Image 1 (cartoon, rainbow, N blue to C red):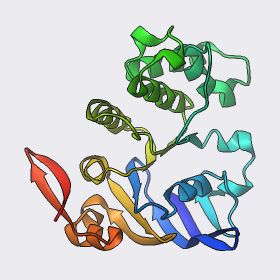
Image 2: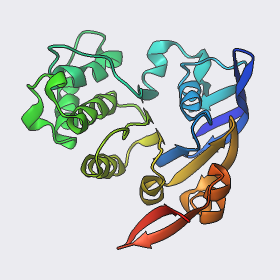
Image 3: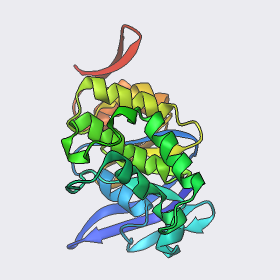
Length: 248
């Protein structure tokens, strides 16, 4: 479980996160949703210890994430940012291997290699492992980066908008694979409310830097709550056994 107490963060005279109090359950997928500028990515960075708050604490496994050494934090959570820099001439296998660095510190063992093999297999990258990352399609590249985060073998995986610019095929493929990671807790920033409705176990709704709603997916992904959160009329419906959020 992640326990967030009175988390407040200010930037340039503005309050970006305002007295956030949360208890985020582990095991499963937790989606962070909300309108643009709500503070979703900032919250994820703060929970990961990458942005120090002005006040408040974030405890994961009983320890304050902001007081942990970087190497210790890297064994608690893996973090995938919105955009990754260019990695010229780096193969998919080499990219995924970086996920093991916090464990072997430059001295990979047979166990490290086995975990890398498992990540390649789990994210269906066997045919691509020798390819240069920059030669992949957007969906293939995102699978490779998520596989790197998976190979870090942390109880928590933090993913900041991993589905941005992906087509429906890769969106569904990645979410199905994440749902299959039963031994991980996944905190993910999402814009697609239908994806949240179909895949999230728990949902946090942010608005204006504050928690507007939080709870099991069916407590948050409702027509009334979403309409209030986004200030536009939204409706939860079902099409061919798939939950769908539409306007109107």
